[in-house]
Image 1 (cartoon, helix red, strand yellow):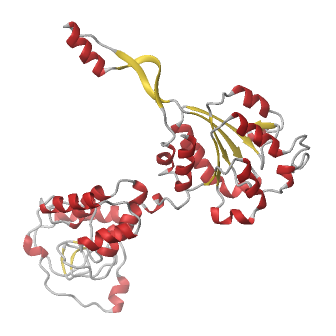
Image 2 (cartoon, rainbow, N blue to C red):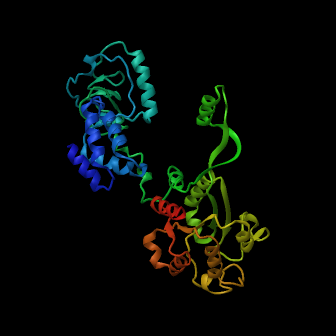
Image 3 (cartoon, rainbow, N blue to C red):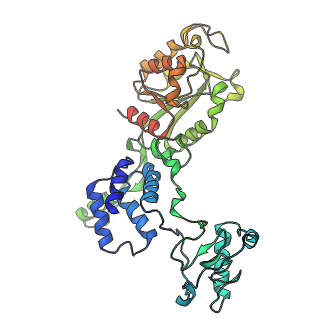
Length: 391
C-alpha cells in the first residue's frame, strides 16, 4: 500500500523523492504515527509535501489510496468506559423513523453538545436518542443512525454522514492551475524579493553584539537597520469594460501586492496605455497624470506589472485616435514600447484563461509588445511572472 501511495503521488506530479519516502517509512517504523490515521496523514503530508500548492493533490491521492479510513481532525479526550464503546448490534429503524431524525446544525454545535453530555451522563446507555451509547438515534456513539453524527468507538462508517473526514480537501484552492485567491496569492508574490537593510538602526544585531562583547570584555550592544524587501514595483491596472468580469481576482492581487511590497506605485488605464493614467477612478477625467511624467519619475530599476485582459479592438493598439474614450494622438503600441524601453523587467498578467488567448487578436498583439512576457492570472502564471522579473 505504501509503494502504491508513493507511485500515485509521482503520477499526480507531486515532486516527492525516494529519500523523503524512505524517511516517512522510518518515521512509521519508529511509531511516530501512533497507530492513528490522523497522525499518519499529517506525518505523511509533512514528510512528502514541500510546496503548499501540492497539498490538494496530496489529499486526493491520500483519499484514493487509503479509501475507507476515517479521519477525525478534532479529537475530544474524555474518560469514556471501554464497555460503552462495544458494538451491541445494529438497531433497525423504519424509513419513517429515519425521516424524523435531523442534523443538529453543524460541527461546532455537535461538539458543544457532546461536551455537555459527557459531563452529564453517569452510566452506560444502549439505544435511545440523547445519551452517548450504541445502536440508537443519538448523534454520539456507535452503530446507530443519525445523519450528522460523531462516531465514538465504532470501527467502520455505516451511513457515510460523518462531518469531519480528511476527504474534505481544505487546500483545493491552492492548486497551481486555478485562479489565484486570497489564501495563496501572497505566497506567489514572495518570489519577488531582494532583501536589504535600509533606514535607521532599530533592530538588535545579536551576532554583532556577541562578537563585540567577547572582544571587548563587556556588554557591547550593536544595532542594525531592519531587513526589508528592497524590490520596487510599478503596477498598471486596466479598469472598466470587460475587466469588470475580473474585478474580484484583481482586487485580491492588488491587496496582496500592497502588503508584500513596501515600494509599490500603481496607476490605472483603460484597455491600452496612452498618454495619461490616473489613481482615482472617480476623478479620472479631472486628476490625470501624464504617462511620460510617470516614466521620468520612477527609475529603470522598478519592476513593471501590467494587469489587464488585453481584449479590445486592434485599432486601439495600432492606430492614433483608435481609443474608444478619447482622441489619442499616438497609438497605444507607441506607449507600450516606451515603457518596455525604460523598464527591462516588465510582465503582463492576464485574467483571461490562456487557452482563450488565441481567439482574441488584441491579446496576441499585446503579447508581442511585452516581448512574450504575458502570463495567465493563475498561481502558476504568477509564479512564472515573478521568476521573470527576478532575472
